[in-house]
Length: 197
Length: 300
Image (cartoon, rainbow over all chains, first blue to last red; front, side, top):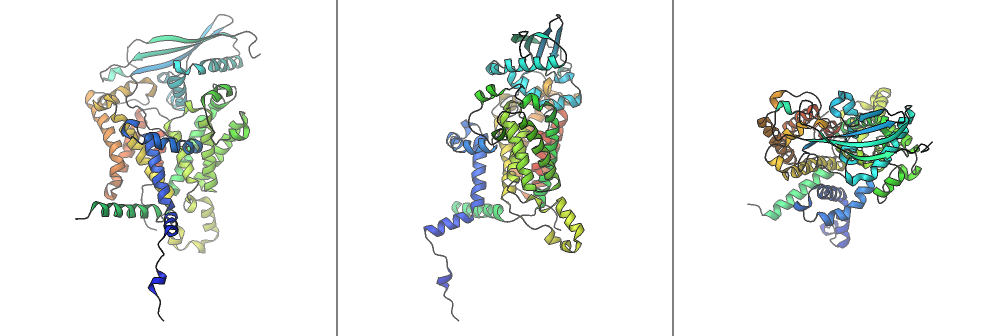
């Protein structure tokens, strides 16, 4: 029996090209995701097509939770120690001072568990640009203080900071360093007696 | 000598095969288990503060959140609206999903649960996120499409115990699975290191060797005690340039089979060291899950 070779060879045309491409969908997906993630995470100055690619993929990335950033401690690590304090004045005049992110004063487990506190208070809440967060936090704090049996009449938020030294020495660790702290009260709220009662 | 065009074609064909050829299911199963366990630890750490971070009467009430976040995101808040019911749902999804991933019970559903829980809390308060959250979201998302339950799975172990005659053939035990989800996650790890290295290269303190010394001074990241020997300018330079070399070298060296194991061991040492000196919760642990995807299991 004779079998024609020609009849077995694939027909080349636009349809077969599409079919062939579809067979490789995994490769296209992997390449597409890699390019998108690369563009998303690399500085614009080093990757000129970033604006175009990010514009195309921002929808799916944000929708599906695939957004990402890997720029911790860069381009340069922060050069100041930071802490956020909450001061509450009770109706009887006592002042309760709570350092919210004094990680060095916390135990090993507590500072590990409260890493998100550091993120929230030190990286966002303390900043002037994030002033929209100040009053909601003060209100949250008053609710919690009332649950604890306090009767706060005033809540103040204070940021503390001190510069790192340019040198590297064992006695310059945060728990040993003698550099003086500076502070600034960035939010004050006089709590109305009837608020949220 | 081959033309550049021929080399490109050869590389493309090799890459296509790398993506499309089925793979041993065990690395994906190891990844699934370890990611599931770490997602449970993450949930446990987040649990006590969830009302504060995500609740309607927490630090980010709905009216402030609405102002800051634009566009639609998939999350449980689409079902519940701004409601504290969502916190209960996130807890249930995270718990069920994490356990499902660890045990290999309905692994795709479990991955979807972990992913949904992670995107939900990420959407509700983006100011509390760390890099580990990115790794959980991305890992869980691609596990939804992976056949990661073909090994290290409780239902399979039970069925093998009940029907031992079905599990005699070790080849049948680990049927190859589609590779593309594993390939995406492997490439994700390379992108992570490359981006981290490139961003650091742009900073003067990383280029002059003082960056790590600076980081070690910061109280907010301080963790366990460090030997005084490490807190010197020379060691700061060693660690700063070592970090740059590792982060920029990993995405290149990992592709050479002979170097793969040494690179992974160096990476483990690097992250173990970081976890000792720096308090960044689970990132150093979560990244080790992605390392498992690069391991080549012994043949059965």
